[in-house]
Amino acid sequence: MENFNKEEISKLIRHRRSIYPAQYSGEIIKKEIIEEILENANWAPTHKLSEPWRFTVFSGEGLKKLGDFMSELYKQVATSRGVFEEKNYETLKNKPLLASHVIAIGMKRDEKERLPEIEEIEAVACAVQNMYLTASAFGIGCYWGSGGVTYFEEAKSFFGLGPKDKLLGFMYMGMPGGKWPNSKRKPIDDKVTWIE
Ligand SMILES: Cc1cc2nc3c(=O)[nH]c(=O)nc-3n(C[C@H](O)[C@H](O)[C@H](O)COP(=O)(O)O)c2cc1C
Image 1: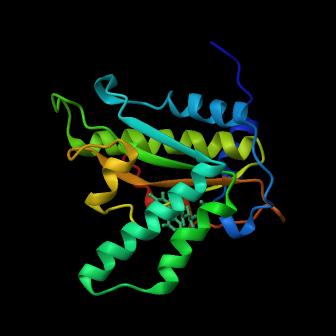
Image 2 (image 1 turned 45 degrees about the vertical axis):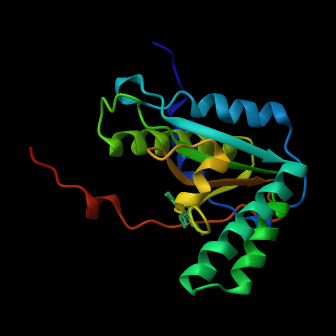
């Protein structure tokens, strides 16, 4: 049995924060660190070892391609639904450019559907938490964004996802330009029932 430092692990879990692109300094994160973050994502729990997480990593010129894709798809779909807003278009186009990297988060459905879909979504969420924690340990700011084109059927193929797969959002990453933020939670006692 490995002897882990429990205090450090609790500290990391509670210190993990969502930090947003407007708060990034512009510094580019080293590729080796992104690889480490992805490697840790790969060790998430996974029922029947379906390993459903799929990631597309955007950096450099890729960030512009992502912003152009998301804004144009939003324009097309939102216009057809009569809900287009120029402000949203501009945000989708420009927000990726504030990040060092953006990782599209996908769920690849098990070919034989050996397990309920929700369990594959849950496994991906566990993988994202591994990313969040590893990023925090490196002092990297990141956040899971699920707005914009996340739930547009038409977005899936750009990220290599098929009709049965799901796009679950985007992990924006960058070095924080200011102070590490605080957050808050209501007491755990309000959310737990003990039966002893
Ligand atoms: C599945 C999921 C989707 C999220 N989507 C968004 C989002 O679209 N926009 C946003 O500002 N934050 C989003 N967040 C981040 C939460 O806002 C954030 O976790 C929350 O404010 C608590 O802050 P903390 O992560 O720093 O503790 C998302 C988080 C999760 C788990």
